[in-house]
Length: 173
Length: 275
Image 1 (cartoon, each protein chain N blue to C red):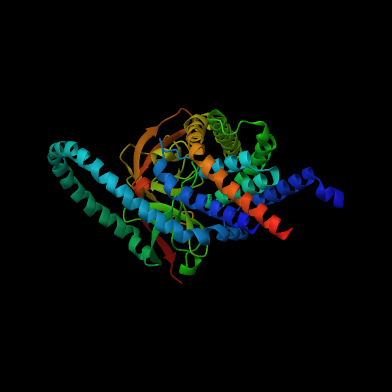
Image 2: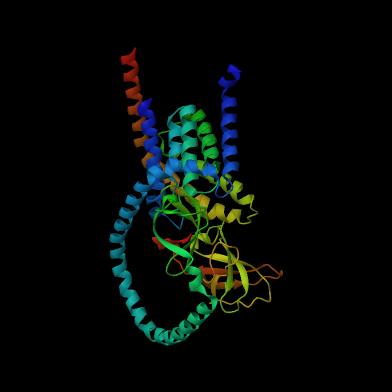
């Protein structure tokens, strides 16, 4: 359990640092990929409901903190998204390329569309379709590419953590 | 009760309520609840500094090769422009004298004397695609306060929106949550400059509610008016790029090109009010 918490904290901090620094250099047409959303999707595809929900909420809250605006919207959206994905993940061929790309794309579209609706609609902003086509769709495309190199390494990290937990349980019993 | 606590739906509903409460509590700028941001911002601030520094250096190497190619083409174009610029230069010298006189008249220097400039480095840019907020390497321990104006040698950048222990968040003037009381330098008409989500990616902002009698045209210089109590009077914001006239009385707006290049911004100055 201790290793799991340390690994989760490391993942969140690494994602936060990368998102606020390096990701700015990967911008395509002024749109950058979002490693925090992608990571939440990867974890939700790999893990159970509780672990996914916690990680989703923490990654979302980290995104909220980094943005420096209202706290909670990304936390709520990634929390709910992680629960939904983790509930169906065992029924999927999650290592298939198309499944990963599809989940990366659709999850980003869902999260960012709901985010712009919450943030922009309440302010009477009229250009939602423009933002959807010029920001949400390109970001979803970038995230669906970013999910590919992330999936296997994160899966390996969790495999190592599972092995460590099994060893500890065996020793204690 | 124990059964209720074990219910998955109850736990999910509870988490949703907690998050929504957090969202409502943190929606006001300067809310104390945002101090929980220190949990993330304090440990990652040094990492952000190091990675930003390294990324800039690595980016610089690639830029060097790109620049050689571009320089050749630019050189030819620049030769053509020298004559043009010499002519413009004479005009600028005249404008500079005029500008100096105007600034003196506005008592700009006296206003700046009430501020202490604090040099800051940008250590992180906005993580998402919606806002134009960046993180600087100075926080409450350096005396930075919410709403302190942020400038560069060229003009206005924005204002401090959140202060953590070692870092602060700056909302730039092209962010959709930013509004600046501004005026047209030549005509002295007072207007509002605000960020726009669709212009943000191009590094532009807009000037709203232009009534038909306002004398404004492309090329006009826009500066802060000093109204609103956040920004001192006379800081250059940018130039009018385009004026879009619509039929309604207040439907017209102007697209403003800020003097600050937000894509390449690395160092800023926070104006800290002297005690």
